[in-house]
Length: 200
Image (tube, rainbow, N blue to C red):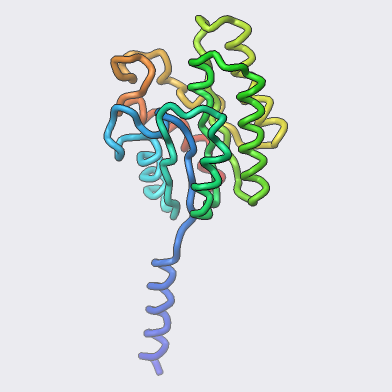
């Protein structure tokens, strides 16, 4: 009898240990993909390690594609959502800003992406971005406000500035001054984790 109970307990503990965790998708562009660095050094991979080191069972899917704009968000989500994620971190907009696209259009595309995720009961965290002042004071202000407005309207958890402590600092970026290096990606992972750890 004792052997049977021990076997049952052992079976339960093994099953529990192998229980599937949750899945997080980070939808973004080259900043997410990890342009110029090894895949394991990009912030989604570093973030996954931080989460697992904290004892949480989450898989982080890097859905970054270089050159992507907000216009591609919903079509890409329809594909990646086939994996049935529990949480989405939406990190798009950098290329919209660099190309000087209309903020109103970017906001409309991001809103559509948020609504798509929420309609499928997937929790959304919004990653905010800033544009440098050389794009014009009004454009930079409106671009920053876009993320704040969306987070407020849709009641989202929010990473105010994805590149906090990284943007504009040569020591944390590649020679192009735009894409983070490995040290930069480590800081981004720290920033994201700090803002989402209570939600995991």
